[in-house]
Length: 310
Ligand SMILES: Nc1ncnc2c1ncn2[C@@H]1O[C@H](COP(=O)(O)OP(=O)(O)OP(=O)(O)O)[C@@H](O)[C@H]1O
Image (cartoon, rainbow, N blue to C red):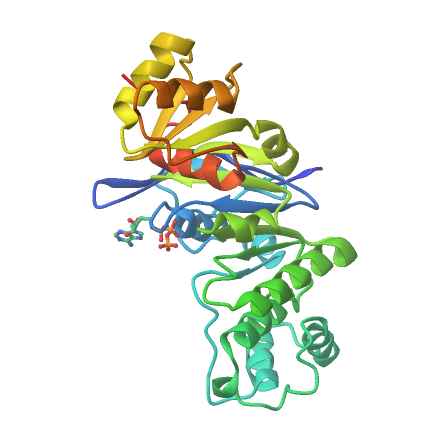
C-alpha cells in the first residue's frame, strides 16, 4: 500500500464560508510533501482535518488505506503532528514535557524519549526549562514529541516560521534525516516558496482553499523559461512597437516600467535598436530565466499565462 493519505473532495465550511474547497490530495509513503500557499489559504485547516482535530463539512479522508472517522484512534496513533505552534508547559523541562505527553498517550518508554531527544539533538539539555528554549529548539522539541511513538507520518504546520537561517537549515536537515533514515513520510506547510522548495519532494499549491497545482521539483525545472526583460518609462508605446514592428506577441507588463518578452526569436540588440530609433528610452535590457518564485507569484496572481499587452 503506497498511499498514506488520500482525500476526495475535502471541503470545510465555517459560517457559510468555504475555507477548504474540494481538495483531492494524495500523499505517497516515503515522500516529503509540501503545502504551499499564502497566509489564510487554508493549509492549517487541511492539516487539522487530516489529523482528526476537526471534521470536514464534506468529502472523505483515507489514512493508511482506511477511511478516517471519529473512531480512527488507531490510524491517528501512527501520525505525529505539530499544528500551529508547538505548545509546552514552559516552566517544566524538555524531559518532563515529553514524559507528560507520553503518559497522556498511554505510551511510556523512557528509552524512546531519550532516543527522540537524541534524534533532534537536544540530548544533554533535557533538564533545561522550556521557557529558556529558543523558537528553533522548541520546534525541535515539538518534533521529538511528534516522533516518540515512531509515527509513519509527521505533519508539521509552518515548521520554519520565525526561524533564522541556521534554524531553517537545522529543521531541513532534521526532516530529511527522519525521512531518509527512519522512512517517515512528511506533510509540511509553508507560505515561503524558497523554504519549502528545499525540503519537499513534491509541492501542492493551495490558494483560497483550493489545490490549484501540484508539481515535483523536476517539473519546475522544466517549467523554467527564458525571457528578455526590459526597463523603460514608456511601457505602453514600447509594447505596441514590439508587437507591430517585430511581431512579438508574447509580452507581459510586470511593473509600470518593466516588460517581459517570452519565447522571442529576436535579439536584445534588435529590440534596443528599434526602441532607440523611436525615441523610447531604454534603461535596461537583459536575458533572465523565470524562477520558481515567479511561477508561484503568477499562481497567486491567478494568471500563470503570459498576458498580452494591449
Ligand atoms: N474556526 C474558524 N472560524 C472562522 N474562520 C476560520 C476558522 N478557521 C479558519 N478560518 C479562516 O479560514 C481561512 C483559512 O485559514 P487557515 O488557518 O487554514 O489558513 P492557512 O493557510 O493555514 O494560513 P495561516 O498560515 O495564516 O494560518 C482563513 O481566512 C481563516 O481566517
